[in-house]
Image (tube, rainbow, N blue to C red; front, side):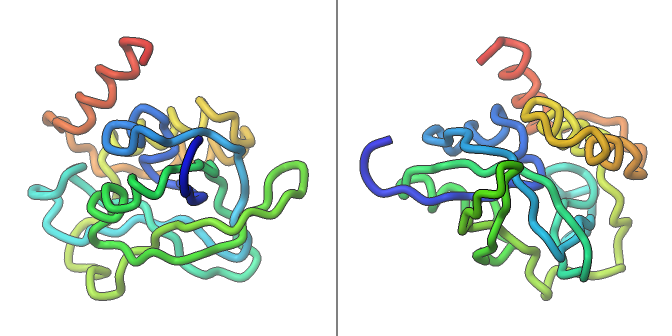
Length: 176
């Protein structure tokens, strides 16, 4: 990859290459990794009936002894603005991610902004969003116990259409 780049740790829908590259074409897989002393949670920053994924979105929060598995991607600086726009209700933070071979990567990731965290809405993810997380974890071979954890996340049962999900699945099914 030519030019300036940054390392990005994905733990939500951007686990799946086809989701990330919809708007960030420079993304290149580097490794799977774990973020220690954090846990995965789901929050609805707005009314789920008006949200992109029709349910809660993944976020991380500090949690002693917790572990969040994800993917370390290498992206060109030119994609940073796209990623920031996609993650508009999140603050960028920098974290240390450890790969299975004990390499440490300083990565940019995103944590939902406090102003958007509320219990006013159902925080469970839609089945579609959860499916993208599980597919991304499987695609990148995160540990089976973490895949099982994701599969067991309770979803909100939404059964309607989700355009971004359809786009991701079309790309995935076309083999891109």
